[in-house]
Length: 259
Image (cartoon, rainbow, N blue to C red; front, side, top):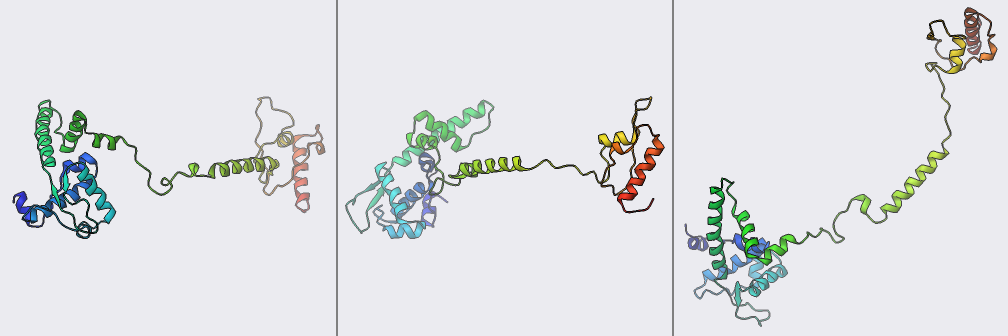
């Protein structure tokens, strides 16, 4: 099926070249719709109203009018009735786009063949267009791809939490409050409920003097011990067995048990 047959059978052919050149696919769609309306009439004139464009393109009036104005200013479309208000305009397409497409495709085929001869990957037509636009200084394309993208949203899009207004002060105040709270926390005393920590008192209680080998015997105290025996209550000259008995007696007394 030829392009003319497709246009007659409900197809609207969109130019990739025009979409790439202006980085606006909807612009190419509007041009294709004008070209289709021209092909349906005997006089090759598009006299469709803006309401018809809105219905068939499913778009708003301002979006369509802005594209038509750009096509007219770039001489892709001729508006023979520019002064009409609230009436359908008569528009026709020029041969400018067809000529530009022919020039590009002829260059692209040669460029793609050269890349293959260099044992490189076959470039796509879009990649070929990027090189073509750079070599021919197509300003409409180069200016758009170099322009930084605008953030979406009324206030510049969504920002990270640390960049939002007021968050800097809030974070600083929270840090200062946390620092002050840490300074107010008193030093907690360690309660050695199961007596697993070898404190100085424990070592002095169970090992009054170091052994000849220099090793410290491990202590195995009973469960549920909440208090510690003061080293002053044990005579330093007593034997280890007597100290152990006195220690056990003290534990029983603390637990309200008779020895």
